[in-house]
Length: 115
Image 1 (cartoon, helix red, strand yellow):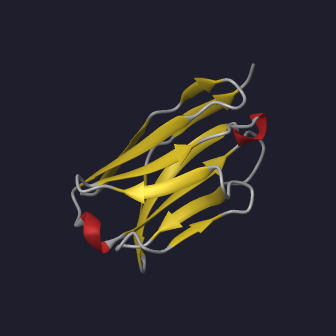
Image 2 (cartoon, rainbow, N blue to C red):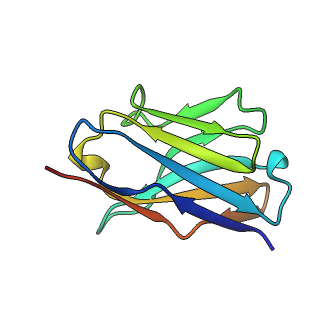
Image 3 (cartoon, rainbow, N blue to C red):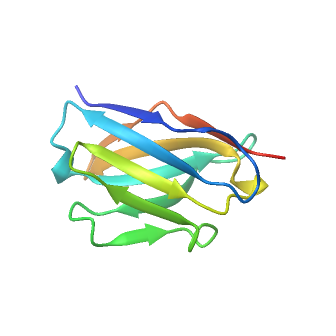
């Protein structure tokens, strides 16, 4: 059974940084694409970034380009490095592991950007 566990969220001041982690278990991590999504209160879940199995091709939403970096490590973990955080980045962040019709989600980690 595939499980995804996010960590690294918290409260940070505007301009600060956080690094989110997504630890995967129960599946062949290297075969799946990975993505980070976020959902703010009262809003729909939106795509933030994705990374291919090789890690060579990434996608970023325009709102985070130049500030966020998605990566994947050797220990079945994906990361989202978030720099220059803004109050509008406040949301619950979810990681997603997917391949065709196989889609798995984590439980989410809260990121709050506030002074």
